[in-house]
Image (cartoon, rainbow, N blue to C red; front, side, top):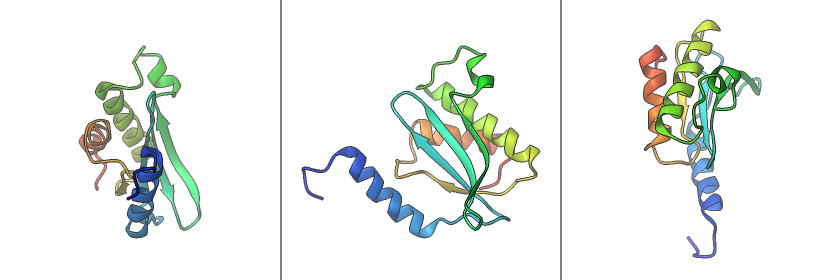
Length: 122
């Protein structure tokens, strides 16, 4: 890759590569994770209809009530638990994981592991 590309451009190219392989169906929607410097976001998406079924982030009122900081591992774990609880309430038990071009490491991995512990299968 050329040296003049930003980290964001490199991440977007990786995300495109991941999205060629990962596709959400109504039976097994896609759990998409986006990580910014300040917050972490997760959505369960049905790509066939193009709609978000469930969403959670560090901006959610449930999370804000706990006075959590949006950019640490504990925040990512709580978002993972929250997305899993909301998905299970909607009857979604199986998902495919979309890491969004990020490495499966740190906050992304913490969110995924917390969602697995709550009962999501992926």
